Length: 308
Image (cartoon, rainbow, N blue to C red; front, top):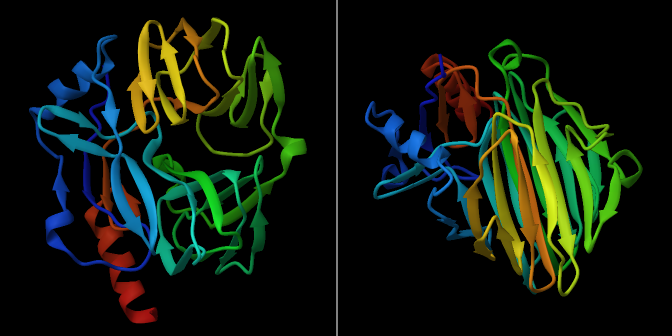
């Protein structure tokens, strides 16, 4: 029997913004119909929404709800922000803030960001590298841009129920631990999971795939096998054609799985393929917290109110 995943959302990456108008209640029995529709081959394109994050314009991709279109997550991936590409006089700065029940995966196409957290980690991330921070029961961190030019992605992955209260940890994986290879006119890099005989050194406690592709000016058709329970394509720049459907910058498409897709591009493009196993049950999301119960979120809110 398929698991019905319900996510209630009141999110804002960074410092608190207690604006009740930002709360989306997706815990709606009729929304399972939307989820089934999203799994079909003719699922609608998701257009990222433009938001401001600490003075930086970002595209917020997941979660998404507009009219009849609802997309809570792709496998364990419950959140996606696309930063830039942008050049700004004032580099990104996101003050210290907490997380529970999730892992953040940060990847840059351009620029540099300094990560600091409550474990004492201090790490600069550069293009082609991965920062994977597992919040578990509690962690706080801040992010500071070190460059005026910035372009990157940040995902949140919901931890399995068995791991949502584990001790926090931080992994920085350099290019040497993230396999790269080329097929036709596309250069691939594997950030999380395994694909096509390659294995990332990043450790996440559930099956997940995070793969990036960069195509040359005119890409030839190539075949891509997708072997996850759930998967999606997101275009960070340029345009990509997936089985005859054209995706432009800032668009996401949930794709058929356990099959082979035909991928091509007509211009230089950057994109990501991500997904994994279906979530192991309902999740609640509020601000920077992901949890299986309201009590865990309430406890986190009380702790942050007390310690901040």
